[in-house]
Image (cartoon, rainbow, N blue to C red; front, side):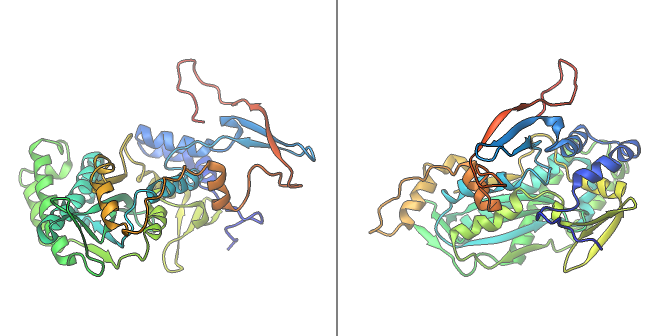
Length: 393
């Protein structure tokens, strides 16, 4: 099997190449939602002459190199590295200097068809219910407001449909009267209690959606008894909630979570081979999976989110409404008395973040190390109607 990286350290195989080879076949065989078609087109054109760019020229040796624009689509594997580093840098300024637990809420497989049918409603309910479960136990068991950050994923390592929510939760919280901070560094809640409460809240939310006719047209509910039968089946299961020991440092919390926030269904680095119309990619524990190109793309587009859907959310102490009130109060209570508050650091520039991410200063020439200047714009070669939307920068 060919090695997945080229000599330059970049992936040898890219999702974009698979889209170019099998995208039309997928469109002919599958009814794509508009956002799925847009994502595929953006991935296909990303960092090509189609989106334009500029010419980098070294002032010392004269070496010139075109730099093409990125598509910035949130499902593109080439566009998430810098966004991830920017997110980590911003969140680290807010995170409380205590331990955090990593908790994962997963839906039973019997609900997957319902999620696929009304994904915006069901995925939104999944994220809200996970946060409500944690917040309610924080108030009732500990008498505190927790800090919660959530990230939604809809895939497993084989690109199968597997909706679940990763939660990073403070190991303790601010008391309900805002007077003190209570820490729970070694243990938060029993997973069985989390699972039972999550199941009850999620089933109640699904029943409300059903009463509001959100699932009108769902085939399994054409039978008047279909909805109740589904609810009875999922009620019998113990819903899976996974909890991991707290992280040692606050910075480590969001460096770890950053691996989840901007991850797409599959990274280019996991593509091991693309030959004879088949794609081989790494899955789990050294295993691999091979799919026909069109089947691979069909699995990939199943994870394209609805337009405007927010997959990273903050609740309770970490909610935006509490940043300058209760979150500031929690920081004050946790800061040692003899330590003065530090001034907020200015956000890192994209050049600094890229240097940390790829280990290369983009202001320096690859040939001689001299200073690089941008010289002129490279026009997009994509033609479109006059009233069409502009290509992303």
